Length: 603
Ligand code: F6R
Image (cartoon, rainbow, N blue to C red; front, side, top):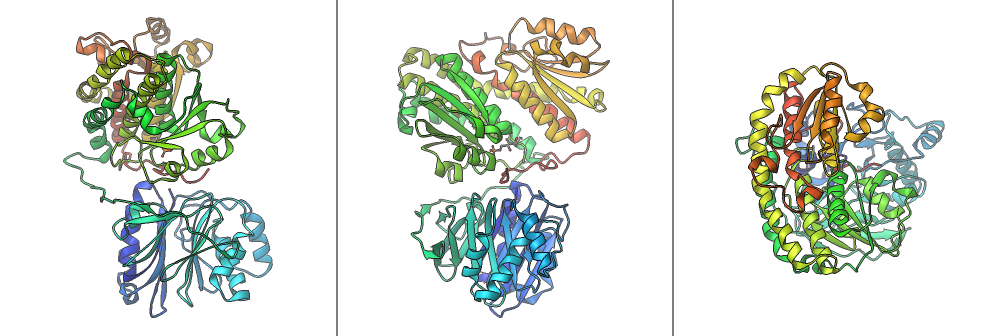
């Protein structure tokens, strides 16, 4: 989703900004732009609705861009206003002196827009952010000081913002934040601001995370203020940065590569976490007090992974478990003694961050389960479990789901031992189960690639899909429906199979595809019969004899003593492959599905 980068550097500015924006591309975006000011005082703004790299071509003819100086850049994911070059950031004031980039939402933009227009400003975009540049313009006219102008501007805004403003006359750069993350850093090669350490990691060895209300001038060094007064800077966070390798490794797309990586990812995580399960050390190392109930919190695929983790606590530990949709958390009342597990691969999801603000956590603990150890979520939580999926370039989550589920279940088992709810012997049986997972995932991949392609032709024209499961299978049905709709842009819904006869059976017509996760509950047979009796086309994901015999049962070993309570995790593989194969046959971009972002920074 929207990403910001800004810098004052002795190195060429435009190539740095464009390279940094390219490193933010993975978050998802629909347009991009930069404003560059050289030390000679020339300023150029360029925007595109094509790929970030096209900005290089646009700026190539401009000699000033290669000189050192200051600049700001942005990747936009449209919320207000269509995807057009005009609506892309940076946004300028009437005179072209002030340019700004903004993440977040200005809730009082319409009122401000009317006021500004009445005072003679020309607002030319449909974007809420544009009001900021005009407010800074007015304040700058008053005070002549960019920092004071930004301070005065943010006092007039409601909503959320990470802003960087550039004054073309002086080359000054000022950042401000409220409910939207921004990192700042200084190093011998310059001063920098970015939404994500990925963008600046090659230039700095750490960063400071701006807090709500902080204003920072990116001068030769960082100058921190709040409400116009000098402020104590937040702690420095050291970051060891390794460039994300963007190598397809022979795969046609990153989604295909990341599906294939799941067995290896699972094996790596289990090897690392298994020694801390049966002795409770993994849990003890997190330093979280005992708890009486569990709530999992997240959005989309991360919430589904959270439900898997929650069912391990519930089914194996007999603990009360609830799941909280982050965007609906504001009315949730937490019981004292709740362990809240917030799951987010990006750690920047605005709904999750807002939920944490809204929930009364005074008598509860917050554990972040994330793939981004430097994220806002990680910094906010009492403790962090890094799910260690490694980089996931495909925007739709695949291996991060598997990584979150495995690391979360390992943590749950360890917690149950450490808090006296599970014996060491029982935990060791579950560790054996976990150690079988890489093979089960590899088997599911092989079966899926064999059985799914021949099904695609018959599914190609279906306009809607149902996904059904029972017990532990329901959450996988939910994940299957989510993956199919986000990748293929076809309707897909999921239901606990028993609910079918309470309404959704009306949707079944001749040939309606119904994907059934058969996780071993015998009652699923009558639900399948109900679908078949109405002409529905059943695609059963299960053991031997299924349409896609990808589950552990098909290996000829019995379902082990616990995994059926929170698994079968490998059932997610055929669901991912089905969604990808169908999407490819429909000509979709499986790595960048429309309207989906890797880092969803608006509520
Ligand atoms: C699905 C998907 C989204 C995310 C959701 C939460 O493939 O990618 O549903 O799971 O936006 O994102 P994170 O995990 O970053 O909080």
